[in-house]
Length: 367
Image (cartoon, rainbow, N blue to C red; front, side):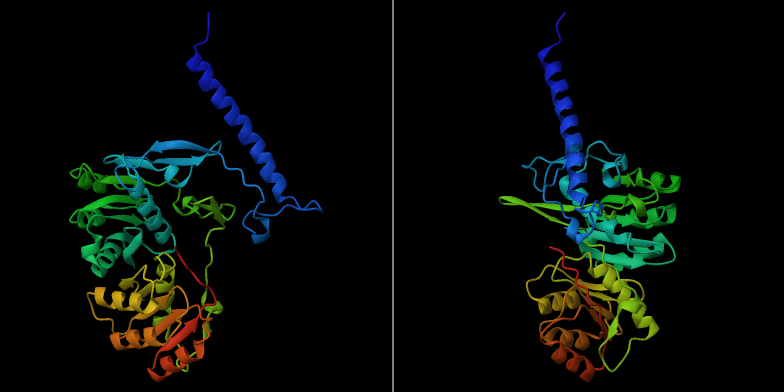
């Protein structure tokens, strides 16, 4: 007539988890209430809570962490409808690892930047090819052309249904994972021969479920002795926000390339440099301690001419050397935040070399 200890223990865990989450929700709501009774949105800078209560529940065990000797799991907010990768449906393939989801998250966030069919290929959390075209198949081929060597063993995200034509091309490359809002029957049949390839069908329309898309979300990162918390980088610009700083203004075609390169650059590890042309990346330099080294790496990795390309930089140029290297390689326009004490020198060099340059006034560091 007794209830086993194991059962009582599990029920106690669930009960205290439920009540603590409930109390935490109340505490978080009170954090948002001002002295005059107004309620602030969490996404507002002034509304970062003094006390942060986070209730998470394990949704999926991972194959392993960043390395095979590390354990890992995917956790999601408790008590709410799962979204993003916590709600994704794995259609085939072996168990996911920590690195698989980290790369898929980067790829998925990136393709949500584009309205037209777009493909992002990610390797070690950096894009090695991104393109926007009339179809997913065309976008994939253009993205792959940027850096096919690095694309080997990477992950892919698309922002439209992945159909048979796209699957036909993607199947030629060894790929770890693919995320898409939907896979056609033809695509599933084509991929079925690759038993280890993970296919993740994202929930809903994709955009509304993009990780970090909600302004009320907060990003957390563990450091020694604490947790860093920030609002997501939701910063976006339009042509009206841009400031022309050189004698030469970008042509309409150059402006399209500049805005494309800027959207990609936001998702490249700092220091980030992106050369783009015709809605596709041509060269990408990522994660360097020196900005000019990122420029040189992007140039060295380009498989086609950089003539007429647009260059995007996630932060200002501290010296004119990056502009000189880019112009020598063939770039004709530049988009960057501006704000360096040497902006005048950089602009002078751009004018001398005949480049069009615009400032965004917004930085996109990604560490």
